[in-house]
Length: 240
Image (cartoon, rainbow, N blue to C red; front, top):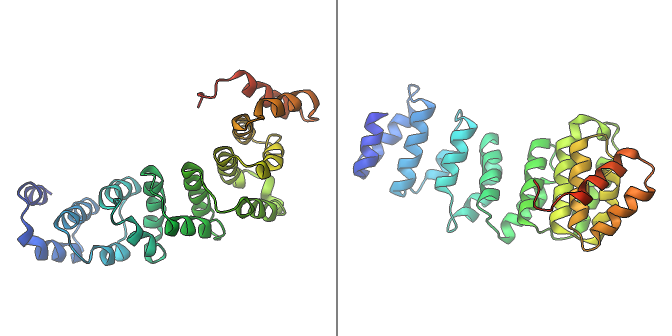
């Protein structure tokens, strides 16, 4: 590791071949692999994406940090294009980084919306979270159709779907289209406090959100829904 730091400090690009050999060694640790990737990225190594596709074993916090350093405005679309070729852990970290950096493009939007229908729930949750953060969806039907289909499953009311429903509620609160309001009104009586709270917060963001929450506090048959609506009527919208 000290040698790798020395190479970084003095920008010794002529040792690129030696770095590639070390990557192939079974003795190369995750920390060394991480540092080598950063060096190769800094040196402009042209086959870096191919190395990423074959990489395994880096812990999530290192993956996120490294991808954040490697992906930038000028090249993020090239990584979007190879998303499905990357290892599973890289895909999850990439979604986090793309969201944190607030990147936007048609290719990215198409990727995110395609991930909403994959079988892997963790990918669906992270894609929904990223769309919620970006605040755009090509059509409300993309989300409403998914919720309609998922809600037909027996396990829809189980804790298994808590994270997913939470992100749907957040997305509907950030994008704010009238088509979403019936679904938020359903979520406001969910068994999970977190989902109820996120749904009430989302409703509050709408133009007539206060009126809707007032109506819920007065007429909704579910006491939990009435309580959470009242709670968000009293909260500041700056509350997180």
